[in-house]
Image (cartoon, rainbow, N blue to C red; front, side):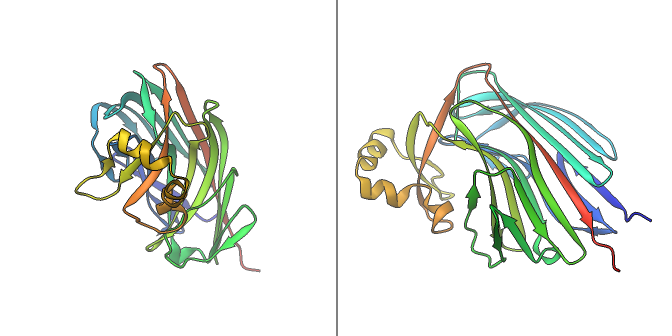
Length: 263
């Protein structure tokens, strides 16, 4: 007899995923950012406004459409999520409503570490040590290995531009494994330096950033430092991409739960 897998949605997010009655996740969502604003479907973010929201949620599906005003742009987001058997399909589709700037485009997952002994990404095994460092690679699949079941997160389709490339990453943070399917800048239109603190969580003046980033040593030190080397570092340099009105970004993922049966 097949073991049960159930799902719950709340506020347009996957909030619970039950395997044999145990919730194995924390809320999943969608994220993106520009020079000043950060949009997080699960955590709220800052510096943006949701202008319109339409949702149709059932026991197994979530269909939501949002119109969002960011600091550096405006866009429409369509969410289509569904549990089918032991698989969860999630599609996030963004269309720019005006010329807009992006730091990335992310389908976000969180899995409770108590259920998973390790994560495999890019043929590497990771053990949870709460480093909060991003293990990011140009792959389309991440595996979470547990005692009673495994989970495989796969990107089935990505619609993007020549400025983005598809990556996935695994991050051991607190009591969860954070998995992102991420469109990440490949050819950026500008580089910024951002102070990542609650009292000034935005880019410093562009002229100052341009001057600092001309110095190779400074650029190398600050380039995505909080992701690559030193978690929560207060000063980071990022690449931003400008997309014209009418551009489309999309990620379709499949999350498969594989039950291990005792012999």
